[in-house]
Length: 413
Image (cartoon, rainbow, N blue to C red):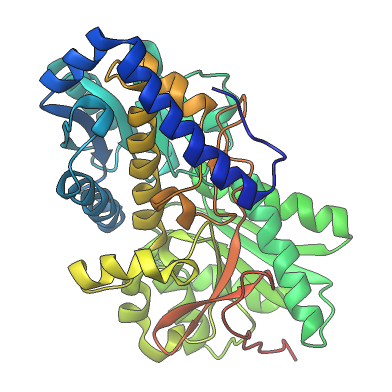
């Protein structure tokens, strides 16, 4: 399969559609034996490994919902055409929120089920553990986890649909500087606090490097343990630092505690989250009006493709959070790869994922409107977005090309 990198987006869509059609015709005429196998195929097993219990359970549930939505749509539309209408069968397993357990779960799932691929696992620490297993077993894995390390290891079977953590961290800083400038404030002093897992350390590294490159002073740079119960010392340190903005990189419970304590203590400087806990309905539910004005970086947002993402809200009763959206995109990529491969053999599907350009349907909800993977297994088209809580909805406010509303900025003085 030939990559279409550099071809204008509209032209690329036309070429993709034509190429797919021709490939499908060729498969029928040139490989009747494969076609007979396809007609015999009744279901394709897809492994789904997510934290459905423990500290990250809600993120896992959101992710599962996104995958289930797309799988059901595929099946209702007739299944995988290249495999004779084979349905998608999701084999769902609980990774818990523990990397060791996640690896054990992956080993068991793959041993007991003939899965064509694995989707998961939200938290980078879990994905790192699971991908060690999928790499050894030759099973492609599609993930929306952020950590650079996931695709830094030279693995051949891992594909990262989102921007990596360091890119997200740098964008968090660069976008914040741009928004401050648009609102008449020049940033010279920032604070970083982050939970000490793969996710937190990757994004904080990007923030730190971006600040250094811009000559901005990091007046507070503190790691804290996931699940911290007392953030008062952190907030006291933040107040004393004189920072103009703070970047707290944290999951849900920590993000609620940090922002609530800041606001209760009258600390109103802009808080810019690192996705995760800041961009799900639970954040608004937990803070109420205190959430208004909180900014966050995110790898994708539902307001970019409402014609698709509103299906999620209609089914589940809440907006399509980014992990649900990105896992839905992963499922969409896998579906198209199965059609292109005309096979449910993991290696054939892996090759279709690695060489494909995915710009139709659910993959197009990603920022940039297209998914493609480079030699490292990263999606170079993925661009972070800055969103802000405004009256119970997440509104994309930057970059300008993606903005759906204007930022509400609270100066530090």
